[in-house]
Length: 303
Image (cartoon, rainbow, N blue to C red; front, top):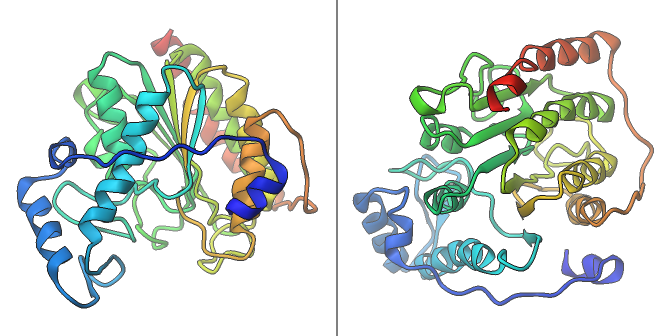
């Protein structure tokens, strides 16, 4: 990623500061944090959950450094408008357990840190897998959460129904836009119309989880996207002129690094295409447009 980024982008690199244990406790239980510390002392590889989130010797120090990237981003955001964290976007982890390659939920911690400072926060998550942990942790908070992901009821993690809209203070702040497996660039572009809600919500910060695992060449097959979709997302987010903290999220294919860079090119205002765009069946496109229309009325609520 860094090699391609240096060829195509102009940016500065910031050395992250390490987070503290109390920062983890913003979201995670003390029992789970203790478990992470104990797992870090085990001198061999193992799993923190049912078999996809690995622990290894010294993992706890790495976790504090990863979370520190988010806290450093918050610190530097006072004078930098766009910050990108390639390693992060762990949106599956729950308060008391790891899940889906995610030992912690750095996104939820970042959102809550900003919210507790009085910021108006919106999260845009386009990782191919639904951010179930992020949804659960922030379900009752007035933090706008827009999730666009692959869904057939079985594809991991199998969550993200459209009627899951939040509760109490967070009611109507949770928006799920499930895309049928195999959806192409045209469907993804149509789904981005939901971002119009950001105009009326008017956040001070946009947190973006830009998992690129929806690319058609990704090892965890789900969507049929090209790099064009990620470039378009960057362009769309840029036009809101808000402070943006973006995460790399998932991505497990040969095109992942280029997809990440193409998103950043969009965020910098560059329209760049490396592939021919993909299209979907008309009925899928029509269905997505209908789903988006269900949420249009929220613009009045947020105004």
